[in-house]
Length: 100
Image 1: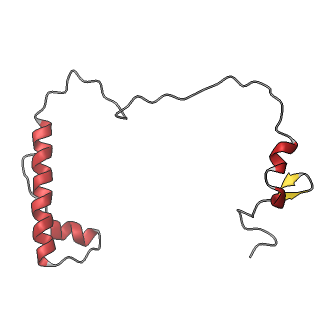
Image 2: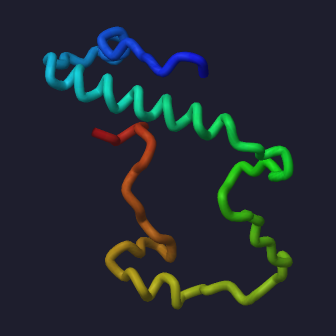
Image 3: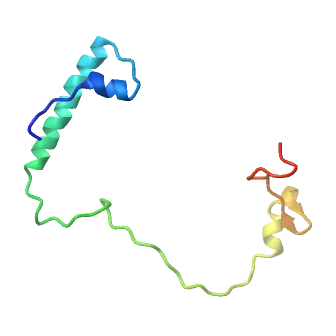
């Protein structure tokens, strides 16, 4: 970046923010400091660094899909107030008939 300047009033107008003069002055200095720091970062040689999407490597945890015994009645016994005809009754999520 060749220029370390930003029009805070213009950005505030785009964001529909009402700022007084003291806030504009402080934000102007803060934005210029950020742009200056970005300029310094642009000078770094990062050609030997592999690009990443995350700071830490992420992998999916995948397990084999194996048949097992169902939880059965044990699951229903844990919430007796929600059990209705051997199923768990939950509040409606999507609007439909009978909803408020």
